[in-house]
Length: 336
Image (tube, rainbow, N blue to C red; front, side, top):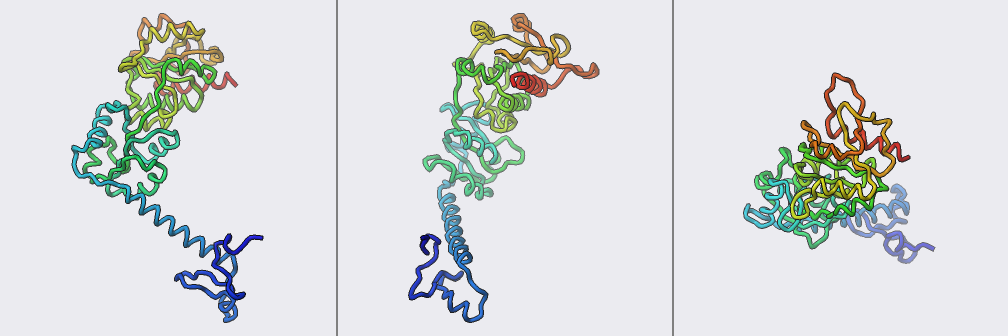
């Protein structure tokens, strides 16, 4: 039998139901009902009691979240300098963190299980802390910045008032090769528009891809526009970077892929096998080149097949993000 304590209602004394009123004093339910007041039922008492507890918890959460914020006034704070450097250089910090901004992107980072090093809040956006900090470990630095200082750090013209330094997952070429059953490998050579790269990463996750390899001359996936355009896919998709100490050369990648029995396929604006006739069911690596110049000749010479997306002659070529998305969709359709 369920007791009054399980309902969150105060004890029953001498056969008289007593529960908290809205002003916190005991309410004699039987007497109130006898005096002609509206009848007070058990569910109403539960709502009053539960509502009081809920409001208290909300208040405590808001207080504890704001209490975690450490106010920083100066631009020379080490974490502030790291955030500025990561955003301005579109690269990782010396400690390996990526700068991100916007409440939706931070929530995607949380959902993706990334490790946070620091979170920054704009002074006029402290309410964001109440929403985000309960989801972030207590050991993470949480800083409150004056509006002008915060705005000087982030690249957005209309900042949402929250930014962070997070540690992205690292992947090697072998990690991508282990996922060939998921979909084709996407290799980008000289792609420079961050919006295109963000779109391609999002489509890779949506339609299925073993992973993405960024060749030399390709825009950084740490660019804030890429992160925003990917809608969080950059946090989850295996990405191999063609830069830094672990830089990969497309020629070496091509040789390793061929040794694994992976077909090398390139897209062309007008010539090649029509997309619907191309075989994308088997393990394949699909190359996409620079928006204007396309793929280098030495890379094209190594391709097993060229494919084209049929379109009207009035259009010279498709946007790289659009073309990649169409090819990835067709590859997913053929695998079904």
